[in-house]
Image 1 (tube, rainbow, N blue to C red):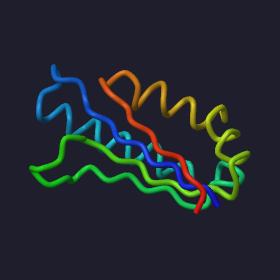
Image 2: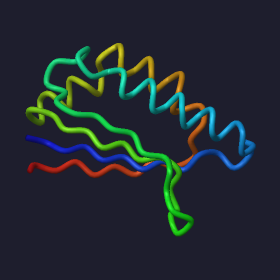
Image 3: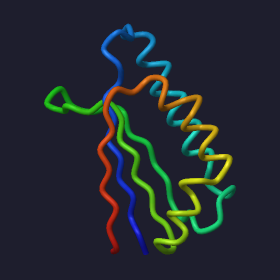
Image 4: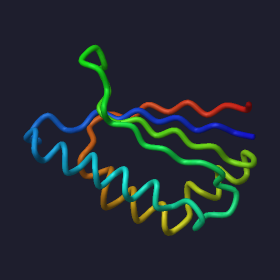
Length: 100
């Protein structure tokens, strides 16, 4: 089993309302991938961080294997969500992938 954790910071120029809409779109888009991508076992987006947080959005996902994670990265459904709901609105991305 492989876990894939992402932390994003949203772009500074987004208003508070825009950030709320973006967070909702990221959550809907990424969590909507469950059942669409073989080997994706679990996916959860969290964006209600405490004031001490320095990231705006977290993705927690679990895959059957490293090969399943690699397939997810290029799967058209994932790429569409990333290109339309995530990348245009984020300024930083941190990733940690590990075997569990």
